[in-house]
Image (cartoon, rainbow, N blue to C red):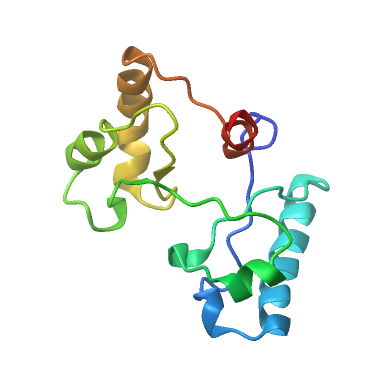
Length: 136
């Protein structure tokens, strides 16, 4: 992923809603994930963070060292009946959309070439979350 210039972000170690955790547990979630990502990528440390389930709070914000990357368009891929359904949902994207998709969902992976083609045909440019945040 890094060699192909994709952005790698932190999503927590055990995929639990962070507001349920203590400050020390939140720090452990992020640190363990950062260490694993660095080990797998030759030292890359994520600059973005997507909280599991989008679950975030002012208390969590005070602990997490970076702003959350939240989405405004959910592909519903984890429960989608087909790749065509995911394509239809994601086709609603507009400039500035952040689309929630899961790489572990086969239907999403299969739909991705068509999704990219359709979004680019709409004149949208695909960028990393960091690039989008910098543009804002």
